[in-house]
Length: 108
Length: 120
Figure 1 (cartoon, rainbow over the protein chains, first blue to last red):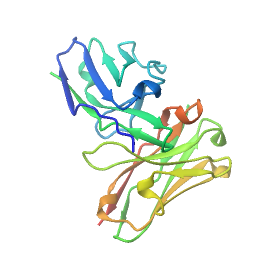
Figure 2 (figure 1 turned 45 degrees about the vertical axis):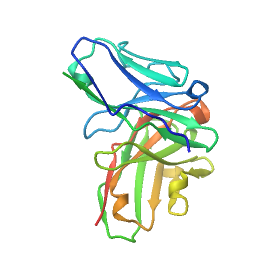
Figure 3 (figure 1 turned 90 degrees about the vertical axis):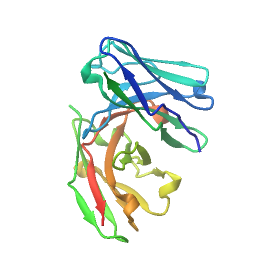
Figure 4 (figure 1 turned 60 degrees about the vertical axis):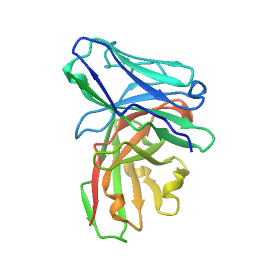
């Protein structure tokens, strides 16, 4: 089955830039979505179709892909960005939707 | 605005079944697939399956094949997830999520609030 790999944790100081990686075989050929989940809440879509932002999501959130890695970038990190972040794709081989293991973003 | 409202917390004995509901509002229910995702305490998100409310077509993650049934009642804009032969490993929060525009590659653009299922 298809596997997406994320670092368990990323730490960043307020105002700096956080980058969260999501690795997967041939991820360049797949569409990647990103979700933010705060404790006790449902996930929220923050980036879809690799790099689009839903309405209401700040421009500080951006997405990109290169090679076998997709990246979520949060610039000018704020305390309110502290959350778990998950990447997600649809795997055509299995017709399954797959989530990465999640990355806990800590704002120092 | 789109809302997905799920049924309340459940406590079940091992070997029992659970059925969680997800009532949709703010959009045309039959126009979007509903997916189900679960999350054990302190763990990541795990996709379980999808269903199409128009025709009740569905697809399930291999891990849950034979134990999960996804259905809907379009007349009340409600989707259901039933999981049988429960074990303690099924203790988790269960989310319904709407699949957005774009077919199979679309994102989950709206989520229910989650339903805690405890097997004990």
